[in-house]
Length: 333
Image (cartoon, rainbow, N blue to C red; front, side, top):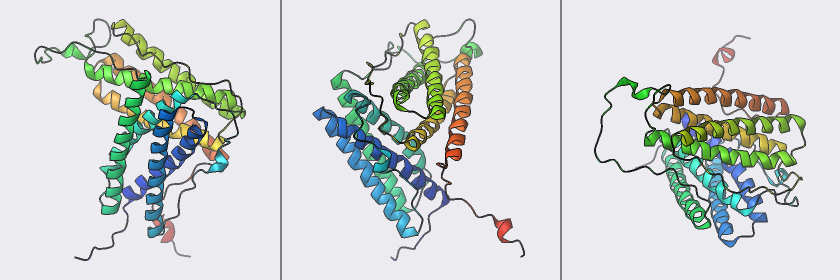
């Protein structure tokens, strides 16, 4: 049977465009960390991650070119200074690969459910599988290195229980203990923000542009507020709090990354943060938690708008492919 030539849908173009930029940026970060790495086990993980990202870019490039779609402006060696002293120690690179693979599984899962053309669907299914494998490898290495912080443990239930009072959702005054779903969302929100604080701490040492420096400092404060809020809740529930990994930032003051790469990275991280806070909001029933998630969601949205404005003003914000302006095309000369 002859296979029909089917054009890419808007969802398929969107997914490929978004992931192309993400993987392009990942290649730069992984190249940088691999260049400075001194740990053999970490090097193997970074090599696997870099090989995967490079393969993804090649396959997406082939699809774009076969369709006659211009490639997004990505990043290159011009956005890296490999002669700069290392800004982070090796264990930070492990945490980074862990987060990249985890975020990629989440994002790729969304995209995969929106595409249908065989080559695109096959690509994203394969990507999802490889990211899951990378997540497995990074988690295993973090456990071996003693830097994986497990979510809190709770006793196993002895029976199935049903909610018998509407006050189950009450988060103010007398409130019930957290359920395992709420504990999970609090834990991983805090874990995500610890990585953000470490990233910001390092970048604040090397970024010289005053506006970008202030933007990073404000992002660090937002993450610190979330850590304090949710760790305080866990402590009051006698579940302890997340324990951050040891400080993985060196004393370097030379910037190894271009300003464009840094601000774009923050824009991508803001996007996943909004998604995951929204996910936590949808699953949490206690009203104190939903109030906090709504508050921080709005704060991150406002922060994201600042970052986008900064990108527009610097000429770094690319327009994704868009629909034609039909009314303009239909206008008589």
